[in-house]
Length: 339
Image (cartoon, rainbow, N blue to C red; front, top):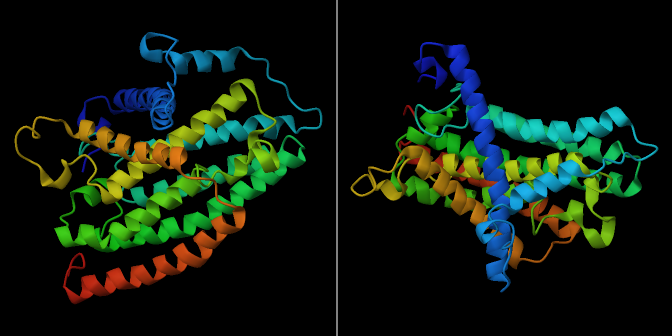
């Protein structure tokens, strides 16, 4: 399967153009995810949301970004300045580089590598370093506690995420993301993987520190979490990184469980055939992001012991047993890839 830029005559130029295009699209989407989140939560809680800056409040994300860029950046006196600035930069970079292997269509992918699943899992795991450094660098006890809690939370739920991915790989037999989407899967396999979809989505909420698992930002306990000592543009990088990670994990959910850029439920007939694959892909991401916002607007925050119990005592044993169950079902029905 060819890469996006290998299809054309000047590979280096098209690769650079593709990187810029994906980066700009992700940043614009992140800006309007914040707008959509405030509008959806406002509708659910019977309030208005952004409505003043621009028509229907559509320019509110840019006003917020401009405000953060114009603010003065104050570094705490006892902070390690290099690590202090390195932490938000790492969070921002790791949130963007993972998009290099995300296929928007069968031919629309920057790097169509054979181990795309492992690349995504590795990059999403590296995001914890930015949070750990952000908790350590400002020399603040509140930020340090927030960093520790966030690191423990992210590492705990990565185990379940990995086992969920193993279940999908058993059904498809490939680590290539394009081939994973295009691999033929009968309807009963989609039903078989539905419990893993639920585990993956809940683990994604915990992995991105989103409600009801936003324990690192428990205002009543640790006053804002790992980024409490950050302001201005450094805080904006953390903010962008969080929402870019939400979008990334939504994209992973779509690729692994919801058919990627393919029409839902095999609707390859008019009027669905004229809708391009990337449009289907972005629409499915929007549906998963709506579920992120829905969870935040409706569910109360977990206690930390409840969070850890869910990860280690429920999701981990269940995922281990379900990997064996999926393998057994595929073996018994002669449905293992290559069988």
